[in-house]
Image (cartoon, rainbow, N blue to C red):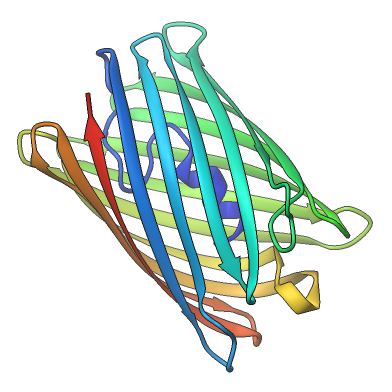
Length: 252
């Protein structure tokens, strides 16, 4: 869900991911997304290539993405680094830029701190700033997650503020199941509330949102995996997005 999704997907435990790896690995992943919009809007499309490397002490990742929204083409580059600063603390920093920024943010920056409380419980807090051509948005996200055997439950609260304008709040609950010997995963999530989002021709606005998603990762070989996602997202009265995404990744 717009800004909120960014914070969740790059946090320590993503919806389609697995518990953090403790060995040095390198990973490359290609992804494709198609989103059908109601009310006569043109479909959204995107393709991305992600490189990730790291291990027990930390990790880095680079994402290059091409997106088409409201018939406008954008290119985005994201660079992130995560570092274990203590036995139970992890800091993540990320920077994003779009040289075209027709719909995407001109630039963005995000910081996250995660605390492993023990007993399968962890807490995290995010600060995200995004600068668009006509507006700036700040997002704060705070969440808690709990692993119990093969299951994970998580809740995240989001507070977004448009500079010189309105604020919005939203909530996301999520559950995941890990299965198999290679940490395959499948999960569902539900999001409700308000969102500050760039809705193309209408600019950056606050809208009511409701969303539901199914996500997962499945290892087809010891070094190859596929990811999938299906989302229904209601963006106020503007449109409803039906998103389908697939990815193919290889771990070295």
